[in-house]
Image (cartoon, rainbow, N blue to C red; front, side, top):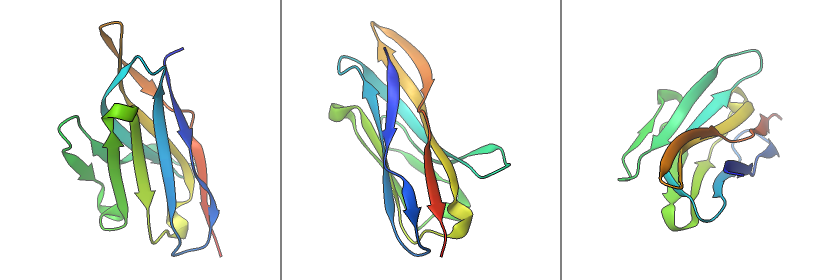
Length: 119
């Protein structure tokens, strides 16, 4: 089954860090551009960071200087390093991107991972 599988997340205190991972499987596929989305409780899903195959990166204003998106194409993996976390960063984080399988590109979402920032 072609999919993104997420890991990482958890509960931390304000100012602490977390790293999220998003791995495409099976190993025979390739990944294209990957985005990370944040869905706060009761809110819509908003994109917070994106990285394309050339390594071009974009961040939403609220995470600039705190979050770092990266990718390891050889491992079909994207990462979101989150530093100086704030309570407003609480929510479910989803990766989203394109996966190439058998010559075809399709868009997929990860299963989501909970991040809770609270003192």
